[in-house]
Image (tube, rainbow, N blue to C red; front, side, top):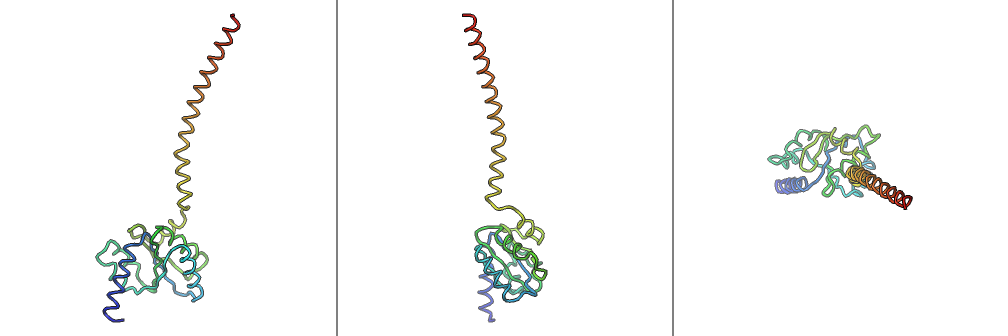
Length: 174
């Protein structure tokens, strides 16, 4: 690889990581070509790009950026799963595929411009989907409002009963 190719590769990787909403560094030692192809297919379905990278070039790409903490995870064979749209898509897809595979490991990653370790990637992968979280949040907002409606309607029902009793007494008196 010539000097110009390296510079182009570094610039391209810096741009990809800079634009990424989420990225996961993996160690793919011990995987067969068929397994890597299966992983790439799964990631592609989730709009995630999977690319094998050279550690030295990646270290140069993240040097002097907010992602310089990634250099600590760049040991051994490394591939990066990059998602430009969903910050947890790469984490979820990689973690789902990695279950039951002892030779495949997650080294670390990036979520919304912040470097995270393998435990945070696993925690993100365990989170429910965006729609489920939004539904839970809507339910949390709705519960107090329902309680308020019930309290207000109980007061109104009591007032209606009082008026009904007054009406009945007036009818009995008349």
